[in-house]
Length: 236
Image (cartoon, rainbow, N blue to C red; front, side):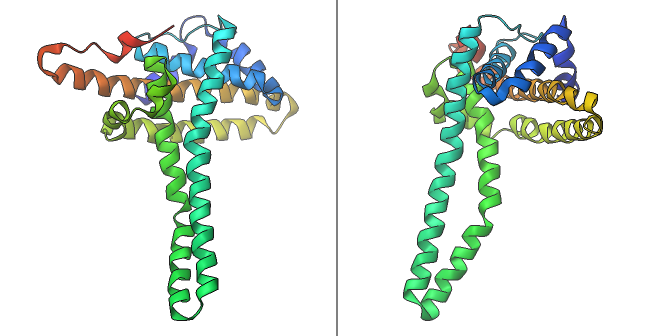
């Protein structure tokens, strides 16, 4: 999986794609280019799930922008809402501890501290769920698919997906090291967005491959084979 992901961004006529992605990375402070990059990454998921082995081109920019906006909304829904709910619960527990006082208040305070320490696992769960949600959206072309538990559960509880989530950490570390080395010089600093784009494409290739693998296996095991593959539902 790692080898496939790392080689994926530089397949076929890759130089133009990397240049466009890097330039969009430079311009991401203007927001719209950032949406286009997200849309391109969703398209990587689409084509990977659909069985394509070559990265998509930067075409149909309006479609990329739309997919990027939807992908961002999905990411925000999975990220902001759980964090806000978590913060409210911690605040309520902490406030209750101070209001009650005494031994009961101290006990509640301990619970509040434990909840605060649980913030890192909460962030990991968010990180774990978002790629599956984006993959489901890419597979079906519908925002509702990102919240379809029946579609998400097979991936979330699979070994393939777990590996696909952990492998990008390796890619991220490699990308950070390369970016840090490049950032030593002005010319190298200009190359950082291109390296980051390469890493993003590689990571989303891994997510898409894992999602497709899990769903293909489940459908193969299904009796009668009446259900088509997830890739058949991809909307381009």
